Each structure stands twice: as structure tokens, then as C-alpha cells.
Length: 174
Image (cartoon, rainbow, N blue to C red; front, side, top):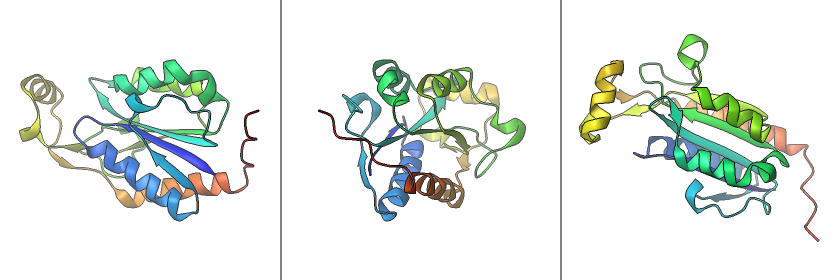
């Protein structure tokens, strides 16, 4: 199957999660394209899509929301998985209260008919942030460091690969 993995990431931490997902899918035998959301012109040539976004100020990244706005119908017509990262201080695949999704995650998941939504811990390097970002981080008392658990990411991606194993590829467009 041909799969698009597109990840919105301002500082690179979420992009690295997307790369890990793409690596697992490629190792499972899929043809995987890795394209930032702002560079995705169309999704109609893909059999499945994995969308990922960091969360900024309690929302998914603008570039991912724009992609969903532009390609919502096409995304809903194929299997789509959505992940977001951002909680810091809670490693791995985040569950429970720490995984309370930003308001727009549910709306995006419904719009694209996402098969699954996952949340992973994020990465925060305060020294690399701009002044406004540092002020926001100070307000929420976020914990500096790398809170990502790539074992949890890869486990989730293997689940996506298993789900795709039984799915027939989309028929070629006329």
C-alpha cells in the first residue's frame, strides 16, 4: 500500500515521532511518503494516511488543520490515523487525564473519520524557544526534557500496519 505520513512540527520533536511511524510502516512493506502538511497538494494517490501534529497553545498546528480543511473529503475516503504530541512530564503513550485532547483534536478526527487517535509525550527544550513560547511554557509549568517513548510510538505504528494488512488497496482512479 502507498501511505502518506505527514507531520506538523515546529521544533522537530513531533516530526521525529512521524519518522518513527513511517519507518515501521516501511519495514512492514508499505511504500511510505513523508511530506510536511503544507507541502501536501492532494491525498488521492494514497491508500492510507497518518496525520501527526504537535500541540501549540492547546491546538493542533495550523499547517495540519489547513491540510484537513483542504483535503477533508479525500482524507475521509481512506483509512486515516491521527496522533498528537505535546504533553511534557508524562512519557510514552499518554493515557488518562494527561491525555485530555485539545479542543480541535475531536473535531479533526470526526472530519476525517480517523480510525484511531493517539497521544504521545512531547519534547521541550526551553533554551530553543522564542520569547512568546517561553512565556507560554512558564504559564503552564511544563517540564523541560524529552518525554517521548519511541517504544510506545513503534507499538502504535505496528498496530496501524496490522490494520492495513487486511485492507484492500484503493482502486486506481479512472
